[in-house]
Amino acid sequence: MKVSEAIKYRRSVRVFDDKNIDSEKVKNCLINATLAANSSNLQLWEFVHVEDKKILKELSKACFNQNAAKTAKQLVVIVVRKDLWSERAKWNIKEIKDQSNKNDITIKRLNQATVYYNKIIPTLYFDLFGLLGFFKSLIFQAIGLFRPTMRQVTSTDTRIVAHKSAALAAQNFMISMAGIGYDTCPMEGSDTLLVKKILKLNRKAEISMVIGCGLRTEKGIYGEQLRVPFNQVYTYI
Image (cartoon, rainbow, N blue to C red; front, side, top):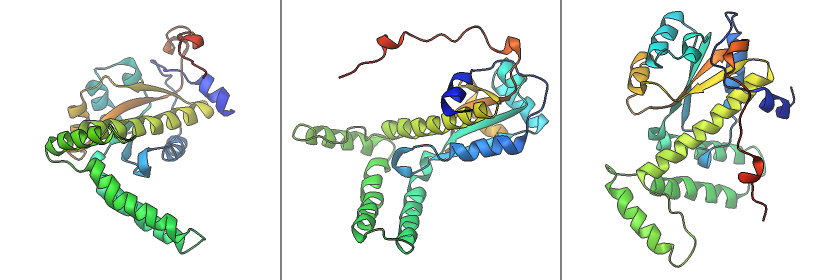
């Protein structure tokens, strides 16, 4: 499908067909997920792709036995790893340095990236039990009285940013699935602590969403797609 066709084809499917889907194709759609736009290219995400029937059953219970989980042939769990910000910042510096040895990336750009990842990112992401974030917020709000500045600097703010980036990746994944005729259903309704326990995830990991995967049935789509009229959500200036 064309991208616009895949977007229109994608629906949240609550009941999946009994037919199996190809796990390699799902994996390729997850590769597309990693190409999503994300904040500062930190890529604070992980993707857990589940086909094991025993784990699927356990995850279904953690998702309150929703039909979209109970009938899914596979599940994909979108995981947020905000705690990896320092590691991913260092990775970016290394990769940019490696690129500079292979092409004509300027010294200026390399220096800018080094400053960004060594100074600006720690300023935004480093915190101590939320206390430092409070003082950072006061400082940046004061700076904002004189010039435009970054204002979302608390631990909660950067957590939201990490989840937004993960959601962009999830959308890439679901559109890619639609493009090959596979269906999905993103679920926020789950016992996230239990999901982490079942998947043996790092204690600092956070669950963004669990996505059911399979093939749609007629009863799997609950009516026509409803959207607020476009003129109520669109402003042209």
